[in-house]
Image 1 (cartoon, rainbow, N blue to C red):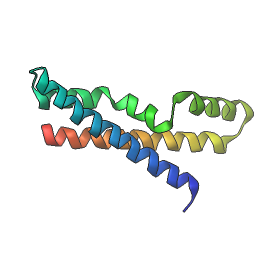
Image 2: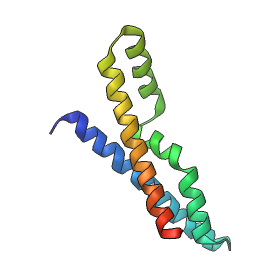
Image 3: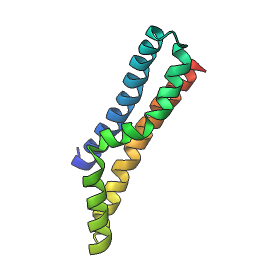
Image 4: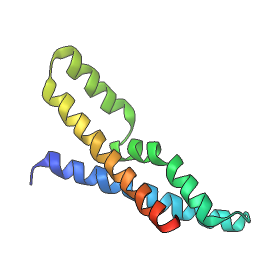
Length: 105
């Protein structure tokens, strides 16, 4: 399989795991703090979306550096590749958010 597709799949599932794991374990902490766990799970899933994308990409600086160099030097392939990585991470984070919204809503 193509290495770019493999990286996109990894990004998707890493972001999905960050949302699901972070929200579920955060809701366990809400039980200890005498908060409503389902409500806090939904709040955490919304707040963690950006962090899930950053984690899936392995940090933002390398992605933005590639985007900058690609735009300035005219390497459109690098820019498109990075945009696809970011979109796959966003799709994974949003899928996790939708799953938790359906479970809690």
